[in-house]
Length: 113
Length: 111
Image (cartoon, rainbow over all chains, first blue to last red; front, side, top):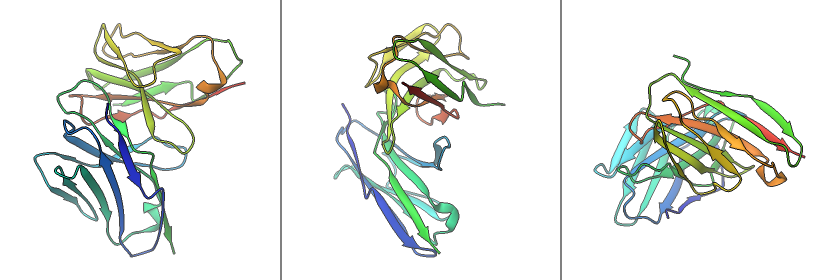
């Protein structure tokens, strides 16, 4: 089955700086890669996703890049703000499969004022 | 639309008790999922369903059962609760099996 590794487990950045979270996956058949943000005590919320036919996708301050050859993908957050503080999860799945997402263990992002 | 709703929000069980976690979605999604999230960890798939009457096991199905008699509902049954089942349980639904929308979760403690 799929295995998703996520690094770092904790990331502390100064407000206004950029943050990068990296994930690797094992199943070359995976082709859908979402990122979720989870605030304390809340449900995971989808913030951005990418499919394997695209190398990069942006949405305002958030971007995701995908390298299918190396089987890794990354989340980039620019101009970080206090409300970006949360736990971020990457995930992977085979888009034509019926089964669910395989998640990384999460990154606790701390924005220092 | 209420989206995905789950009940109860919190529950404490004694070892050996049973309970059903309820999940309902009003988006007419075919795909539904149950995940558990242990402290400091990512979510792990318990069971999933691709439509009414069709269910299948995920990564961690032992100790759980599901049914899917309607498109809207996907209850998760815990039989003979054990301390290892202490976790937060999230239900999710998806229109096509890719983007998933999560419910608010049920926090379960087994003592």
